[in-house]
Amino acid sequence: MFDFLSGYDLLGAFWVTVQLTLLAAVGSLIWGTLLAAMRVGPVPLMRGFGTAYVNIVRNIPLTVIILFTSLGLNQTLGVNLGSQNFDTINFRLAVLGLIAYTSAFVCEAIRSGINTVPVGQAEAARALGLSFTQVLTLVVLPQAFRSVVGPLTNVLIALTKNTTVAAAIGVAEAALLMKEMIENEAELLLISAVFAFGFVVLTLPTGLILGWVGKKVAVKR
Image (cartoon, rainbow, N blue to C red; front, side):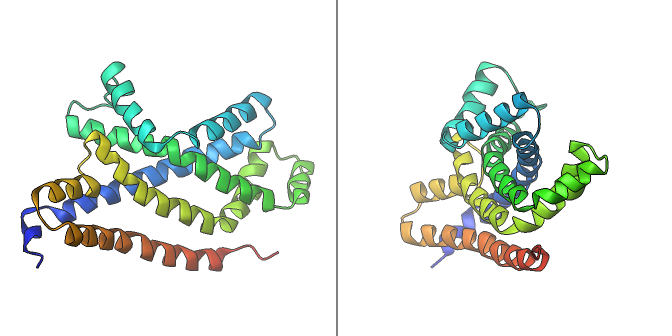
């Protein structure tokens, strides 16, 4: 029944999907945390930038952002991200686009966690002479991260599925291979089932494991 799979690198395609997810997740967590810090910071210019970035990027389709990284950054501006290989450039551009998009959602998740930290704790820390950066990194963010494991898990699962958009610029991940197989094989239902199962395998354990972690590290109020 599944003999048609033998001529395709199915595991390789899903491995590219996993790489896209992991690299974009790390980058989005870093950039999203910085954006959240800007949004709650004392500097009006930084608050304005963070707010504008989140509100604008969240309302732009991911496909548009991914295409812009290829057509705008690479083909128009000549940005190659340190490589001359076409496939490598597209992979890195896809990661960049995913980070730019996903970080806006990470920012809002973390900001919601920051809002759960009692204001009195931050005020007490400032009274001890700590700077805003020290209060944020030593007092607020550790508690905020513990309270938003669940929302961040949802963002990670959405990111895993959003990697399929990278096929728009030729990244050889699961969605691109699926498109190729549908064009070459007369097994639409089986092909769809195989790839659907593949994404369930990637996302379901992630949700279960991080859901358990979220319950274990949740801040008791």
